[in-house]
Length: 83
Image (cartoon, rainbow, N blue to C red; front, side, top):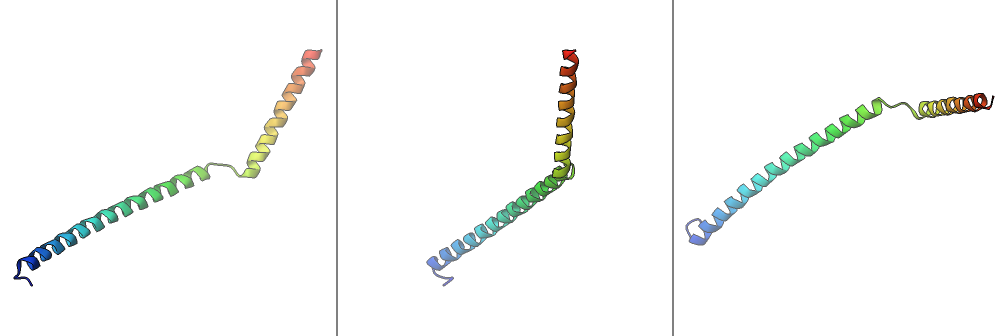
């Protein structure tokens, strides 16, 4: 089959398709590596963001404390201004 013109042409096409497929697989591998790098970076960012935040209980206690202090300050200012 290598000796007939159609066989030679088909053989060249097959080799070209195999080369094209090889290039596509290499590009897909590069894309996969890039996606994995992005995932790792996002995971690292998530860890850094969570590390600095207080727990929900601490947040609720701080909110309550600031509300009480603000309420006390408003009460004292209105009591002083009424005198």
